[in-house]
Length: 228
Image (cartoon, rainbow, N blue to C red; front, top):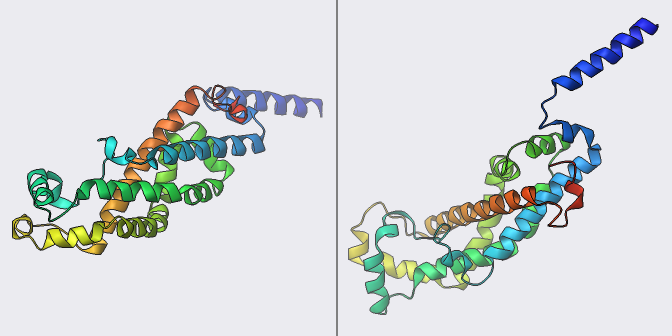
């Protein structure tokens, strides 16, 4: 009996040594703390990102995430300036970005719900997945579902800022129609803005996550101590 116990202890010690150092903090933390810590990290990262992007003019001010018209019109800045000066449209690009910001303002519960559904196994992978491991995982596993849920928010916002009416005006201009390959339909615009808004949101969440990982205690996230 003693020999068997000895062998079991030796086997357990050998297995522990075989665990990568980057994973050992995860295994040493209680399961509930792991799960809560990961969800806390991503929840606060998503909240921080959405708070920043929902501020008036935030999407438009950052060229890295600025929302543009779909297709060839991304490069049709001269034509857009002409139509604006001629009174045919207002600044449609700013309106598209205002719509993205409005959607971001209402998206918090959608992202929180996706994060709350993460499992403990998901959490372990996220914790060891690099600076944006959680963001990458969230986009990979929930990106399509989030897009479906955020699309109505974008559609509502586009209507409120008058973007659909402006796009209809653009579509009636022969100079713009000749660009080809352009989808100025209501659905086409909604899909494009939704996709671009999500790109911007995930980009900001990734930056927030990286920051939290680097300074978990500074951010007041004591649950992350011993996990990241």
